[in-house]
Amino acid sequence: YFMPYSGSVSLLSDKLEKKLLSWAAIGLLVFVSAFLWSPSRDGLQGIYALAFFIPMLIVLLLRKPGFAEYGNWLTLSALTYSFFAALSSLWGNAADFPFFAAQWLILAVWLCGSSLVVKAGLVNPEKFLTAFITFGVVIILISILYYHRFLHGHTTTEIRLYGWNVFRNANELGAMCGAIALLSFVSALNNDNSAKKMWLFYLLMILSLSGLVLSWSRSAMLAFVCVGMISICIFRPKLSRLFPLAIIGIVSIAIAILTKDYHGFDLQRYLERGEWDSGRFVIWQEVVTRSRDHFLFGLGLARDTNITLSNTTVLNHAHNAWLDTFYRTGLLGLALLCVHIYFLVRSFSRSPYLFALYMWLLYGCVCSMFDGRIFFWEMGAKWFLYWIPAGLIAASQINAAMKKTT
Image 1 (cartoon, helix red, strand yellow):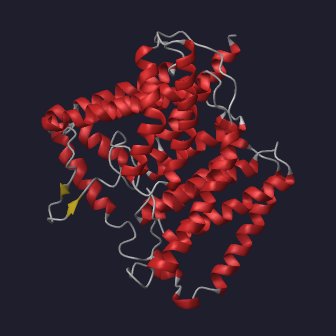
Image 2 (image 1 turned 90 degrees about the vertical axis):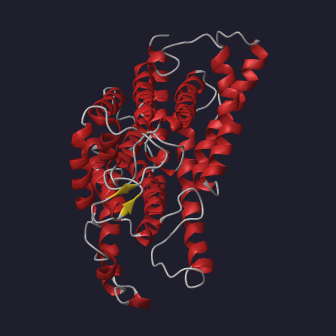
């Protein structure tokens, strides 16, 4: 996964900078993989600090700034949006501004640093993708085993699959499983892969989908289906690449019919749990109504994100990251986020690796329509759906652009 370092302009000695960048390059891979194996959000943040943040912050502070090397307009637009979001805490809860300023710095180091190490040629994330998918599937299988062997029927009566890592609740775990399944599916569509690899990626997809189905996260299921169909339409693979998908679909339907009452499994029971929309439309309607008084700049950020509805129900966010962004940072904050997305997609590529990252990002954007708070927040599970693919896309695009000019 690693490549030789090509040098840079820095106030640090060449030897020290090379060591720090090599540390950060390895740390980037460790950090991204830690979303899967870290036992908690605090653990993930600690891994990020030791593996990537500390060495990269030293380099960024003592290195001559390079606009193109740090992600160009893709990074600048992201940091402009996140800076405004952090600034909104001054009219949300001014006491929380230091917390959000720290989150801005954490995000800035990730975005600038990932572009720098990829541009420097110290890491090749394309080679890392297959290993990441495989490791993700292993974690999903461990999660299923852990839940049904040690938790289900012992310490919990919950019928949905919960995680033991950063993705704790069923919706977060389902979103993670769906992301790994989607990356597997997109890799299977790649015409450059052999037939053997194609079947392998389809197998990895099936195993990932088992975790998604057991979590019964309807938003993640919907996002996987929608983005999967979009992937087919945009990538336009050979028909032979879709043949296994047809077989998988037929077999899955047959299994669902034959086992619908097996061991208490009832498909209708899962699909009809509670209200079909889980009350989200009521939540969204009330949040939109409240936003009218803070239309342009929003209510402002605060660490306490609870929303008390008119029926006294207390929620910890708007259950729609896009709407939560509008609610807390107003139309201006939502517009700045859209500007960042514009810069991300304007250089859209169908090259297999970048295409996989774009579909990962799109999947995260769709999932965020049904769950989650504002996109700019403390590092956690939701970073996996937006800031991780966004940072890797920016790094890869800048790296490709600079190669063309050299």
